[in-house]
Length: 112
Length: 113
Image (tube, rainbow over all chains, first blue to last red; front, side):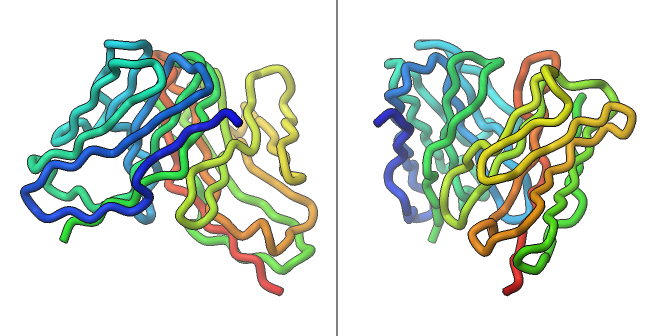
């Protein structure tokens, strides 16, 4: 079955630690995205990648970093510079930027 | 820049009643409009997408939405609510300049037995 997987489902971090969230897709999509979701708010774009080895900042990139070394993978690192990292993180992919985005199941990050 | 407004953070309807979830976008016509559904602690699932082919768009699970340019609206409806429809619904529009999605804040649909 084609789809998007995110791991882990739940993640706990101590303040000052970097953590990396995994996102893998086997849909052969070129574009991938990371969103942050907070209660009562819509999704906010952190980073997106149109193609391997290329990525662009979204609206709230500060304190986050990404890489796109393989077409299938788009990991997100939440650094200690991110002031309020507790949130639900969603990864998505699409064939291209103008195509429908499909979402993974999400990772809930909690900073202790 | 595009913006999206979803009226009502929570909407409560009785099982079997009409579901109406409202979405308005800013005045410039976006290339695409979407409705997604999210069940608790899960990712988002596409319900339907408007691409200018037809103003009435049918989606999954009996939902449909009508694009009304004069009202800058893209409201989501379902004739008869089921308990399984309880979820959060998000409206999104694509920005004409870069095709990034602009999201509404979401509406939680509550179904009363």
